[in-house]
Amino acid sequence: MSAHDRLLSPAAALALVAELLEAQGFVVVARNERGDSLYLALPGQDATLRLSNHARRPRQRRTHPEVVTSLVVATPKRIRQLEAMIAAAQRDYAARATKSLIASPKHPMTRPPVQMRRTVREDP
Image (cartoon, rainbow, N blue to C red; front, top):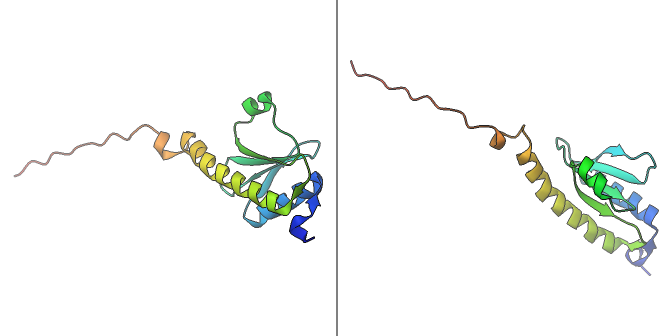
């Protein structure tokens, strides 16, 4: 049996996923009190990717809109399964982080348009 075919426990899988995401540029920006959830983001992004062993509850979804996607590992997984889950989470993060950035008041597309003054020159 190759290493890719071996089942990893949820804790081992979460540690590996965190390591792989950090290798791809993500940074751990927060950790919950119990230590079973990590929040990762790309530098310069407010949007976060949640890595956990359990799904979020509706209240958590309402109170933490900065979490744009979650990667949940609640059962043993093979490395190939984790790679597919990481790829999907990264696609979701890329798509939703852009949308949340555009929806933020700091983004130039959400600011009111600048009024251009028209200067009329008179010929002498």
